Length: 478
Image 1: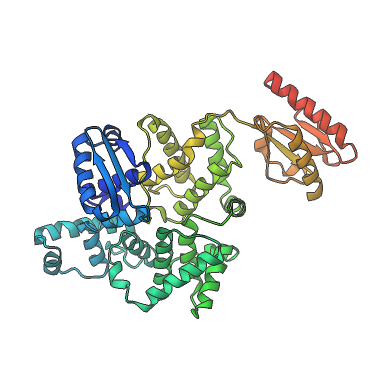
Image 2: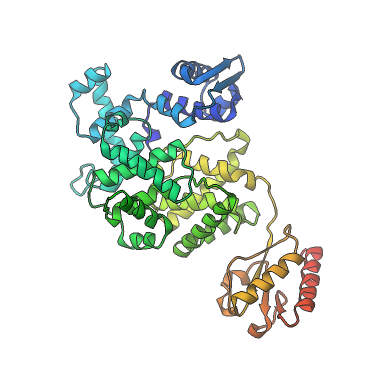
């Protein structure tokens, strides 16, 4: 959201820096086309970047057609963009207005700009606040919405605005230690950017002790999760008693951060844990995945590389967080813009129908999601056929599942994760799509070609029949 208000030249240099940091080398014409600007503008911006970030650059080359930047190995991209954002007069004026420091003359003197310039910047800041906070019943900007005001503080602090004023605050230093302890407790190797996000959120929760408008049902839901209870534990370990709403606020922020554990198994466990919780509370997410499957003619349900970024997107959007975050700019090849537009249409339509008709989503959020899922979607794989297992208990399911997995080809089939204990439990959806249902004999109440019987006593023979049947279906493309 704030990207629509920040000075265009500064935002453009931030985007270019993200691309240069990731790619190191890129053609000027390609970058200009991607950012919808001129060849010469890109070259001038890169000269400005080289000057502003000279202490962080090992070498750079701006030739007639290509850019090449080599940054120091110990510098993270977050440090670079914060330095670029520090030139934004708009962000500085926003911060002063948020603190209630509205004196035109003092702003003009401190920033060495005219009063007219300050007046225009204040008007622009007010437009941003109206869009970000909304209006109160009185018609004034809703600065009483304490939760959204906190999001705006995070928006500005994450861009390095106003942070220097906090460094001598003892609670600010304590917030950093709590953030580090929380990362260790949840086995997350927090990046510098993530650590700052968490530190600032914790600082707001222990410095601004105020009632937050967080739904009680949401708090009760969070209380059943690992993150909420881990945040509470860390606060108590540091001698702080924080109310549930403020713990929930920190939990919101933490869940949005990348999970960087020590081994991949923890990533899978985290994914499965939050997948089950999200689908339970937002069952329409399954329909969203089905919409993507139909649009791209692929099987995506159960694919971790697709579902994980999708779940993060749904989570942060449903909480109203996305538009206040510092999102990285991702370069999308011009040839892939049609895919990006298709992805955007699917997501926006689902959000309007299931979350809010007035929901907004900036270009940077869409680009970030596209960057993560496009490698998978571009493969253009055909849909795999699901196999649904109906069993009387978990032991039968485990036995049938492991044996069926050995006889099927993962190129054509996948076994559905949900466990069904009767035929009546199976959603109507599966009777209207191409799939196979493997049902324990004692539970069968109907006979259809795609319902295949199985039992423990006759397992070897049943597996042979199942294998022959589904193999025949593949050959005849049924």
